[in-house]
Image (cartoon, rainbow, N blue to C red; front, side, top):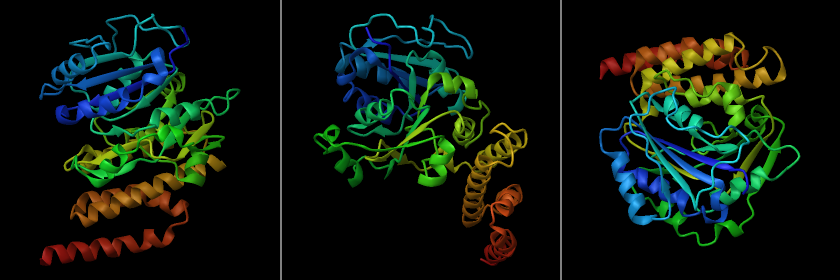
Length: 357
């Protein structure tokens, strides 16, 4: 029996209507991997019976799938022994699917729970409201075996952006792909994830991110505070930890832009970037003032500028100003001095306009 290659970790909170689609999108293309892949769903304290709905769905449609539910899972503990990294998992007939239920603790904590439970050498993250596109696992496998002598630490791909409507034409086109695995994925290798970001615009976010499990543990996993942008913190922690492969084509997963999603919670976004700025000041992303640190500063500046502009468009003046103040230093160091000088006037004019209306 081969070592288990890939653990697909799917955190979910109150996504019963979409969670089965996310899991189906993995199971539909897992046959080629036999017993080298597992799916771990972490139900993060849902109140909409997500775990029950998924469990019944699996029993009805995948009778050969092994389902090992764990109810009342406590953070930081294991109710079952997990194979050590590199140790062969127990022989199981077919795909292993596990459902872990835990008290609500946030997306970062849910992903860490799945990582702790994972037996795979690599962990692929997929959110409960997203969908793995046809051929995605074949593309990931090609990326992982691109350089056998120096296996990648991370694999990243761009998502297909779709709206919340299940009938979105982009989703229908993706579902109509018949033999996507026959299309050779466009892969590029980079010395580090930071260089992939700087030169190829590698995607930011946990969705579709594939990481060696030992690197995840070295990086400390996701922050478990109730903040947004915890996934960017992890990627910055992983930024120097080894080779990265980018999948330029095809898209790996469909990212649903849901109304009221966590990414729109402005205060949590500001809190997340305050955390990232503090971590950078403590050299959590590597030494300061070298070439890779300059990439980190540019990334931070780009993201905080974008949030400051968005907050202002949405009329959230206080948080817009707070984000501007937080990110002005990074933008100045990144050479965006003009933006730093112009933004206060834009902020003042927008505030005056909104008051007048």
